[in-house]
Length: 187
Image (cartoon, rainbow, N blue to C red; front, top):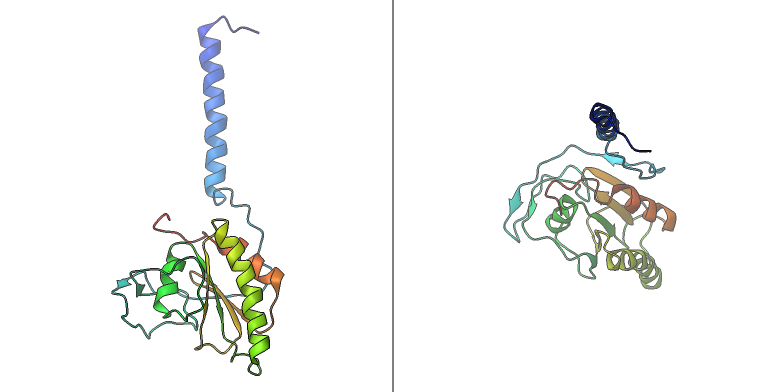
């Protein structure tokens, strides 16, 4: 069907623009259409301690959680993926500032320390998830961290979930729910 009257054509175009504008406004007001699944496990949420960059090697001892979830941090982030060397706590905080999720583990944490074989199994289970997701472009890293009471902690900016027994679904759900949720620098 061909529209012959310019006024009819202009009116149709205005209606179409209006519909698009209403749709865009609804998406913006509802959070931009973020269709992430809700995270079904309990988390702790902490106050935002800021995003100050410190020179590499400088230590900050004023974090409000263990491991930290925000605050002053190293000006250089860690590479995405698995680190077998314990990263200073100030380094992964920078990764979280870029929208990343950090998987921390402590084989000496939990109700009792893990023996060498059990520790290697936990490390391998966590590394399997992190390696696969990081290779696929997800912003996730893993590091041992001896200064926490739990065996496993999952962190994103201002958010912490800590537990003692490996739970594949829980780790994957946290990464799905929180990766790139906070990303003020647009990485």
